[in-house]
Every structure is written in structure tokens, then in C-alpha cells.
Image 1 (cartoon, helix red, strand yellow):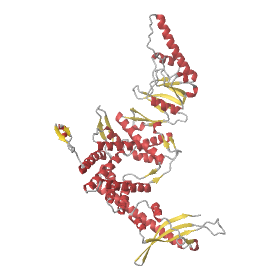
Image 2: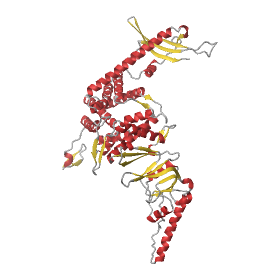
Image 3: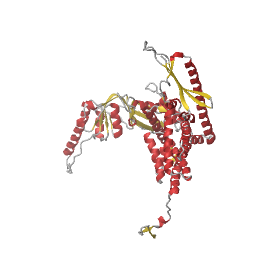
Length: 589
């Protein structure tokens, strides 16, 4: 312990443990924080992609989890560093909002911080780095919207949704059954979705699992599966056209709310008490029978006497059913949850076409299936597997597939995976950096380099050379874009020559004062923000001719002719003329 004084002369005591601690400032503090985030990203990097490895995690209680889901790995980690906790929260937020991509978002964040560290070491202020990243992210977002594609789907055509969900399941341990599981996930989401409002409530999808069987035995039940059995072994195991009473009140006499005691000192008094209890049970059972119920599902238990009476009165019952299951049963069957016996009525009964009890293997495990429910909005995915770890990992994988299907119903835009979208954005951001002469251009280029972290990790996890693979893919993308650009220009030139032959059908709109938005039209034509399109902003480039077909004359206003629009740009330098055509056929009547 030591005594020290602050800048105002006030004394304070320094403990021995605090003497050994050093306070980091400035660049050292920033680098320490970045190192913590990079450490978390390195842990998840090897689990990215279809060839990523699984992690085996052991909890303090001895439970073992095998998974490659980023959110699950980070949740099971014991993280003390505050910056590392932010990475965990980032993955958790991605899992909550999107449901998939929890590993990729952490890897991307780690790459961005790694590039930012290099900029900080070069003396660039953190504010300038943040501003450059903001500019680059806007360019990347705009480019993703350009390269995205929309697809149409319906209840009769679910193949696009299935293919996208299969992509999600390709990186999971259940990829050998990805086709069957993807179809189950899509059908489950469509069963509870409101396509008009584009709204999906995943709480209506219950996921159950039972050890035993094969993964291929996983099934989708249009109804509810309850991990319970009939309260009495002699009750019927199959009920058709069941009318279900859903009770949250105990199936027993009410307990007196007083502290008085009843002394029973004779056999007659005991017999009277027993008769009163039996009479109360009879009234409760008769109340259910009068309402028309053929099955009673109760949240609470009931004693053996009531159970025996239910069996004799031919009224099957299920006890100790959880509150969540009761809500799903009520939604699936269209029934109402009854809190008191006095409120039980025929209108509050749920209806199911079939209620059956199913046994599994040689064990005594039995589950209750409630199926064929009219207007059911609740479904159950029942998973089978060889062990508990396999079932739990399948649940996590199906959760990702369900979230992907839900997101596609909300917004049916997709981009191609395998790192191709990231590489395309990297090229676009790298090109956009040339338009920013300030210090921010270094941050923009670093953002483009960080986007390459995803394809680099995918190549590394696949056993390929990361640098060679990334270089080859980038070269291929640039080559395809250049080929597409030349092909479009050639087609437009032929259209222009064809337009010249139309004679009096073509008018010069430039002389009429029309100035078409060339830059916006080019953005619709080509998705990549390549440097060639930037030349359109050069004042040396000017619109020379705008050719278009117009409708017929005033004598025949209904006579509409071929509409052809050709945008022609000319560049006059050193006496030579260059023609570049952009545009195309508008419509033909």
C-alpha cells in the first residue's frame, strides 16, 4: 500500500494489486481493444463456410456441445474482456434479427478492426477512419442492391425457398439431409405465414426431438406434439374427431383458504369427507361431459382417485402439460384456455381430427400427437437422431433455415454466396475510393480489403491457397464484367444502325431540349460502379443525339409505332469521333 497525491494535492491510497496494473492510453489502448476483438474473430474463423470445422464445448456442469454455429459458440464461452463481449453481443444481435450469418458477421468485424489498426499505426485519426468506413459501407449497400436478384415463389412453387435454405444447411453437420430438412423448414414457415402481410411468427413453430431413429425420420406434423401420455394406461390411445377441453385449473377440490382444522375422529366422518370429495370429482367430470369434451388436457395434476374416475367415465385426460404447449394447442385446435370449471362451455372446446399416442422403440417413451386440426396455424417439427447432441445441433440448424425462409418471405431479394458478393462489393468499393481524394480514401480501400476476409477464410477452410484463390476469383469477376460491357456496347451499336434506317420515324429529341438522365440509366444497366462509368461525369463527354420513335400524327392519334430509344455519347478529341451507345428498345406496339 502506498500514498499518492493527485494534481490538486488530494491524497489517495494505492493498493498493492493496483501498483502492478498499467493504464493504457492512446494508440496502445486502441490496439489492445482491437487485439481482443481479433482474438474472438480468429476463434470463429475456422468454423466459417461449408468446410468449416465444428467446435466441441464443455460447460462447467460437464455437458458437451458440438456445433459450428457462431452464436452458440460465443454464448458458451466465458468472456471477461469488454470488447470481446461486444463481439458476442454482435453475434447475438445477428442471430436474433436475421437468424443466420452469426459466424460471418464476427469474422467481418474482426477484419475491419484489423485494417483499422493498420490505419491507426500510420497516424490516421480514428474519426477519419470511421468516416471512411461509413462512406464505404454506403457504397457496399448500394452495390448489393444492384447485384441482388428477386425471385417469385408461391405455395405451389417453393423450390426457390428450398434452394436458399439448402445453402444455409450446407455448412451444418446435417448437410447430408439438407434437402429434406430444407423442405420441412419451408413448409413449416409457409404454414404459419401471412403472405399478404409478409409476416411470419416463428413462435407458432414448435421443434421437438426424441433420441432414437435416423435423421431422415425427421417429420413435419401439422399440429402439436406433446411430450406426455395419457394419465391412465387403460385410456384409449387413439381418438378421432376429438373435442378438447384445455384447462389451467386444478382437477381437484379447492383448498380452503383458512387456518382452521377439521378433526375426524370417527369412521362416519371420514366416510362423509370421502363422499364429498367423490361428489366434487363427479361434478367436475360431468361438467366436462356436458360440454361435449372427449379429451381433457390439464396444466395441473390430479390424484389417483380422479384419474380412476376419468377412466371409468370414458373421458381420456392428459396432465402436467406446460403453459407454452397449452397455448399452441389452443391456437392449433381453435379452442380457448379455461381457467375455471364454471367457465367451461361447448364454444371453448378445441377440435382436432385425430389425437393419438405414439410409442418409440422398446422404451416406455410415449408422445401425444394432435393432428388434422381445422384452420391450424401451429405446426411441429419432430427431430430424430442417434444422440442428444445430434438432436440439439439439428435444432440449431433448423432454426437458421427457418429464419432464412422467414427473411425471404419478408424480402425476396438474394445475392450469390461463396464469397462472390463480398468480392464484387470489394471491387466496387475499391473503385469508389478513387472519387475521394482526402484521407478517407485510405479507410475506404481498407474496407475493401476487409471484405476479402470472407472469401479468404472460405478458401483456407476448404484447403485451398487463399491468395491464389482470391486472385483467380477477382480476375474472373472483372473479366466477366468486361465481356458483358463489350457485348452490351456491340448490341447497342447495332440497334443504332438499325434506328438510322427508320427514316422519318426517328426524331431528334436533343434539339427539342430533352436532357435524359444518362447516369441513372447507366446505373440501372450495369451493377458494378466501375471506373469507366465515372467518365460520364467528364465535361468532355456530351449527349450528341437522342433518337426515339413517336406515335403517329394528329390525324391518327391511336396509331402507335415502334418505340426505339438509343442514347449516343460522343467524344471529340484531336479531331476523331468515338461513338458509344447505351440504351435499348423501349417497347413495340
